Length: 68
Image (cartoon, rainbow, N blue to C red; front, side):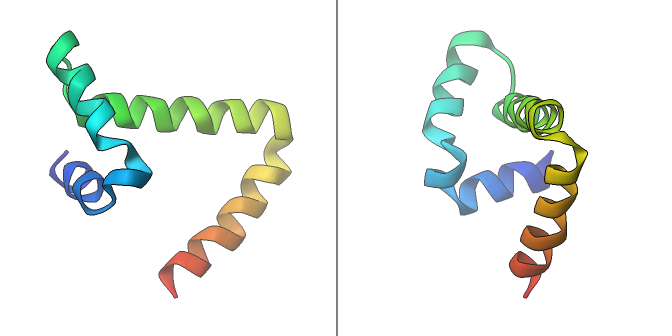
């Protein structure tokens, strides 16, 4: 969870960290848990709508481009 919090703090506009912090204050759930749940939901929706080829193409392109 510390690495997720660190990632969220490193990219606050991308991760919408202010929004997750306000949700954390109102619900009591940790922002990192809600961020991971939102990411998993987005991944699942992309998988079922776009198919596994879209997801594999995204990981095959985005991850190497990000690690470069």
